[in-house]
Length: 396
Image (cartoon, rainbow, N blue to C red):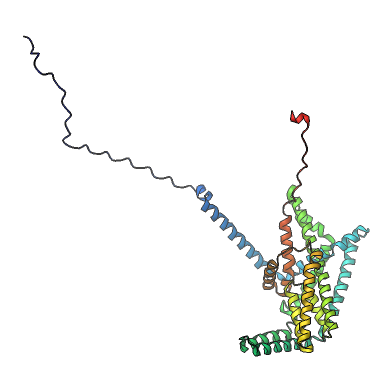
């Protein structure tokens, strides 16, 4: 049976649309982000800031604890600091005697006894010069304050009289009280503590003069190599800075007292000698001491000689201070004290709060030594070797 060729060929059928849509497969859940490790938290930017902040807070806390402990032990700390400063100032005398063949013990006794005699003589002369005229000096200062107050009240400035009266009573009470006169040291500590501290300072000074280098070498025993070299460098820097500060301040104080005292004597201002002594003592408190001494001298001149002489005294004080600051101090203390006046004021304020008058005197040399130690912490940079032309072999 033959097939029918005329029958249409089979054509593939078109795909039919699905009657029902296929269900979408659910997306695979994303893996959770890995939690940062402790190392990552501590090493990122915020972690570094946090670590540095914790270190700063820890350092401040440790410094506060140390300062609090030192303040509680000021009966021991202050004599040791005074003995250390005096030993640094007298160290050239000890070295000079040792180079002349004297033994350490003999040089120490000569220096210590000579220093006590000289210092005791100066203190005795100061007390004798000031004690008999202190009452008159305080009365003149109070009268000068009264005159300035009357001038301010009668002038065009809106000054409240009650505030002037309160300031006058506070200043006059301070000047006329025993805390500023013969009992000034009692304001810092009791009389028994002063005597104990003085004896302790003398004993500590003796050992510092005799065995200062051995004492420092004892503290450096645990160190070797570069750390030992750094310890020797810091010790030499501290002694040089302290000694230079004390000797330079004494020279500057003498020049200030002589200049202002001679000016007061020429102008026939009464109490010239006590005022010169106050200038000498005030010079050991930078900035503030010279200002207070100049104001006191101007007040006395205002009462005794009138406003014209008082203005001349102010001009003399300003001229002496400018001479000291611009010419004498850079030469005498060029290497011993390089501190900004703001740093000096902050150190004076902190020292006064912590240790009273003695703290104000000791704060500036301590700040100067601290800054000198910071600068001497690392060895000085070695100069680069000179440049040399390469040889013919090196070029090849």
